[in-house]
Length: 365
Image (cartoon, rainbow, N blue to C red; front, side, top):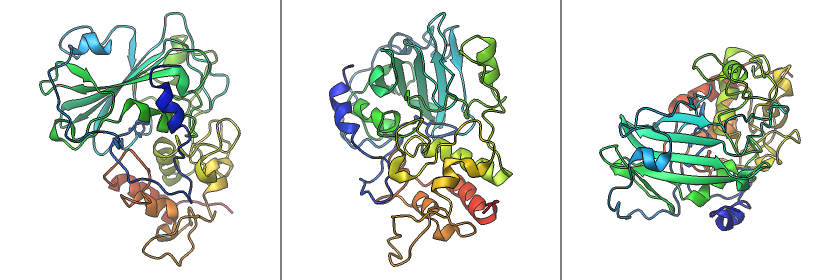
């Protein structure tokens, strides 16, 4: 078990999204993983010390992160792939850069389209920026075979004011560079990447069948096959979300921002939070076969709107956003908010996507 194992064991018992559970108030940018949450899948820094001393500058970016090849912090190694998920994780207006590297000669086990298994030595970087300034880079590296967060090592780094060096942050830090962005403690990474969630069983978010089924960037399903990085070729058709435009946009948003805790109820991963599945499965023939339609549409919610506790709500009430718990909880911050962690600011554009779907989308009986 890696050096965060003891704390991870404690956190694995924490549920991410039971309709009837009581949760702490949210934080900022906790991860996707998720990119993220979004595309993709990022945190609540509940264990962070808001008054932490930033201390002396850390080591140069190239030395500490193993990502860049020189001190410019711009040029990455030739064996590192930049990628962007199709659906982005909301992280309170921060921009994100994502990179991944695989050991030479290794492949991702893609036999289960919903549950990719990554080779030992896989390394993933995600950098958060705001107004052109890099604030934080998160690094996850697979150190042991098998699946799950306990086979990965998680590290978080704060960037210096001048953007030339980074300092590892173990216990979290609030208000990085006076931007409001919070770095989570390394132990908190398991809350989105671990078995308490219901997304990818190997802990990787934003890099899978649904999220790479696009042609927008140079790293996608097709290029993974061309580079012989997958055990079986995965096609865009397998990652397509069926339905009208509003449905595709909404289900993609829920997949990226909610699915890592509310996973599919199909046995591929642990039971979804609260019995609610918002992770979109691959190879869907019809949208009604999705976990979203099976567990959310017209299903009763255990959560009640504090402003109208006497009114029973559906999780998703077709034609009625104001009567839909999913929509209402996305629109609040504090007690009852969703996502539970990773954000202190309501994502108004994302809320509009969900509202449009609920109000005007197609909902077969």
